[in-house]
Each structure stands twice: as structure tokens, then as C-alpha cells.
Length: 524
Image (cartoon, rainbow, N blue to C red; front, side, top):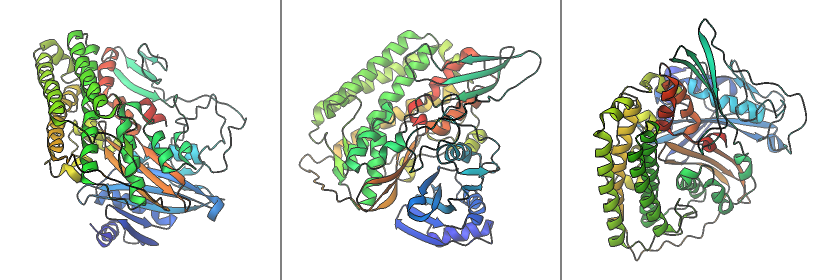
């Protein structure tokens, strides 16, 4: 779909549409600048015609340069393998825009974030409660992502207003933010009627670190080290998405060797996380033997990571334009390790499926229906388990096309569907790694000396949870001016709050582990 087709599609839904400017700097990105009065209707049209949820919605502070803010809304066309970014200027003396969240619910959290971090009001959004800057410790009127922000200023504190469900026999059960296990902090407030959960409200943001602010003023080489620390279990995916954006801006074409190695490491990251979570699901129903077996498999993968890269969690591997390790893979040793991991995993699958009580516990538990998932904009394996056929490896394939990547889908949306999907994705990852390893050329060494340029671009990767997105903007000195990050957990936490409805509280750990969302990836 080129610009003409996209504009034509918008005009079919919104006849009065006109773009102030159109650009296609990259083959996978289309950028449309529109007047503020056209932004809302244009978003509705793209949402319907592509069709796509809001993949990103974020702001920039350009008051110092041009007395304005800029708001960008990003959609994706899986059919045409393109991202569509819609932008509008907002005057600094009237920082507001018409909310789109009432019609496109997947925009809701992004609008709250823009209000919280920039003080730009999405007019008409009925829920403008803070996400990460907790009202009890951060006074209203502090906007950390504005360029002139220095520190939190004193002011009036207030209390967070939870949504309440009231009636005879209904009571609340608060859980967290401190939990019994070694996990991140998050507050879960259950409303129950007898035993069934009728509402779950999440409150996160306890690990907010100001990550996006940390990127500003850094070089890309400095910033990639921050990217791989955003969410520890997705270190490689985050650094890869960042590197992808930086390479596009600098017009760097990576070698085939680099592309294969990156795909191998990305799949290894997927494998150790999937098997870890399958073990966690088993542990949450007291199936300790299966959980211990999963831990052995995870440890074998981590040791393989260390053998290949000197890092169990694949840190320090990605650089701008290449990878720093893995080029000396000894195929025979690598395949021996992979075969053993695969054999152990097949045994693990048999152990799980042969337990009637385990299978009974996960079947029909924690159902997330497809319509709900689509409305919320749920992505990644959680969306695919509810029947949503989206995977960046299929629609933006790169080397995955050569390996004939097979996207895994389930329909029922319950814990069992998410478990089965992980099992099949693990097997597909093993197959892909074999294919990519066979194509490695031991004598090929990529030498890249990046020259950083001014520009902006979107980097993306299908991590094990779902798409990790980095929108990066650099100045003429090569330093980062703005870096917007979207981890799949940001939207998928909402999916968990709907999946538990009608279940009992003792099933919450099981539902929670089947999603296994990131606190740090959400809080940023």
C-alpha cells in the first residue's frame, strides 16, 4: 500500500481529509502530517481501513525550537508490511487535543501517559488518572518528559481513586504491591461476589525509572546499553529494536551474517522465557516435578547463551550495525546442545500432557476472548492465543522468510491455549535456529563504522511477549532528542484484568503466569 492507497483509504471513511505533508523515507514507514482538526477522524479511518489498533501514541516537546508540541499516532498495516505514522502540531499555549480513546480503546493508556508526562490534555477522555507518577508522592503539575523539566516540584498530594464495584455481598481483596515471590511490584485490587472475580483493577508504575528521559542527550552507542536494561528478560529484543531504529536513521544495511545471528539470539531468548513460564504455570498448580524439569531446560539454554556470547541473558551482544559475539559458533557443539534441549523439552511436554489434573486445571481457565483482545489492542503470544493472527516475524520477515516461518495460533484464549502456543513456538524456534545456523558463513565478518545522522525512524522486533517498538529521533549532532518505547506488557496487562473475570482468586497466579507480563517493561 503506497501513500496514494493509504490516503484514498482514509478519504473513503473521511471525505474531508487532506494531508499537510507526506513522506516515505523508509520502505516500511509512511508519515502523514495533518491539521489538528483532521487528526481524530484520520485516526478513526486508519483504525478501520488497515485495520489496526493504536500501536503507539506519543508526544514530543518542540517548544524551544518552534513553540509547539507534536503528537504522533502509529498504526500498522500487516497486509502491506508498513507502519503508518500520523502527526499533528499542538500550540504550546493550548496543549490539548480531541481524545480518540472513546472510539479506539487501544489509545486510552497512551493518552493518559501523554497527559501525565507532557501535560497535553486529551479532551473527552473520561479517565485521566496517573499511571506511573503516583499521586501520593508526585504533585500534579510535574511533567517529566517536557524538555525544561529539572526535578519534581512541591505541591498538593492526593490519593488515587480506584474504580469501585458496590452491592450486597461484594467485597474487595487488595494484593500487593509487595508480593511473596521475587517479582516486581504491582497492586491488584479484586472485587469479588462470593468467590468469582467480577472486577480487577491494576495499579502499576512502582518501578518507574524515567527511562525515556535517560535516552535524551545520549549517543546511540551509549543508549543501546540502556535499551538492553529496560526489561531484563527481553534484553536482546530491546537492544535489537533500538539498533534497528538507529541503523535506519544512519542508512546502515546489516550483513546477512548479522541478520542470522540476531535471529538465533532472539529465538534463544524466546525459548528460555517460554519454558520458564511453562514451569511457572506448573508450579502454580503444585506440579513441582514438572516445574523443576523446566528449570533444567532453562538452565541449559542460559548456559548455551553464555557459551555463545559470554552472557547468560544475551547482554552486550547487539551493536549499531552488527553483533559483538557469536561469529565463532562451533556448529557441531551448538547442535549437540540444541538436540539435548529439544529432547528434554519433548519429555517435559509429555509430563505436562500426561497429568490429567494439570490439564483439567488449565483448560477453560482465564479466558480472554478475541473481541475483547482486539478492542484492548492485545499483542504477541497472548493475542495469538485468542485467535489474533499477528506476528512481526511473518509480516516483516527479513531472514524469517527464507526459513518459511510458521505463525502459531490458538483460538480458545484460555491458559491452556497460551500454554499450547508456547509449546509450539518453542519447537518452531528450535527449527528456525537450525536453519539460520546452517546458513552462517564462518569466514564472513561484518565491519561497520556507523556515521550517525539526523533523523527519526521506527525500530521493531517480535520479542517473546510480542512487539517491542522504539521510535527514535536524533539531532544534527547525532545525539538522541526523543526515544519512545512500547513494550508489549504496556497493553497486555489490561488483557490479564479481563481474563480473570469469572474465575476465583486462587486461579489468579495461574492466569498471571500464563501472561507473564513485565513490570519494568510497563513502568519505564
